[in-house]
Length: 125
Image 1 (cartoon, helix red, strand yellow):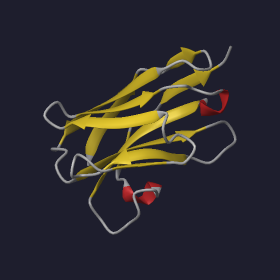
Image 2 (cartoon, helix red, strand yellow):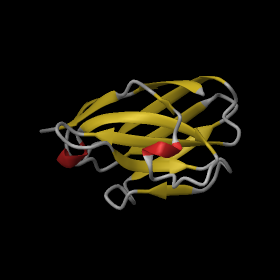
Image 3 (cartoon, rainbow, N blue to C red):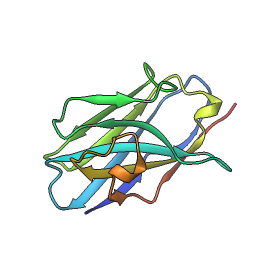
Image 4 (cartoon, rainbow, N blue to C red):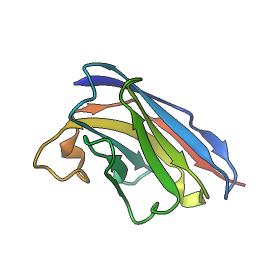
């Protein structure tokens, strides 16, 4: 496992942008998928996107495709979620997650063994 700490959340108007950061400590991020999930009030945690252990391949939920971009810097042990054209429905607590390469779908929370504490993103006018 690794320890993860998110930052960068806040209040933004619809159409605005935010960049979330995820700082990892502990073991190397090699062979680890770095993902982002979110949870809105009274809703289940949902997959947002992930960047695979190859440091290149990304997968996004349809709801954020074309607006959100995930990147990582393994040397700095960081992952990022750039969010553009934010919508009210993007309001949620955003969680960074990390998991070792496995046969479990990267869209599933079960694929991740390490989670951050979450950072609030509120999109409102």
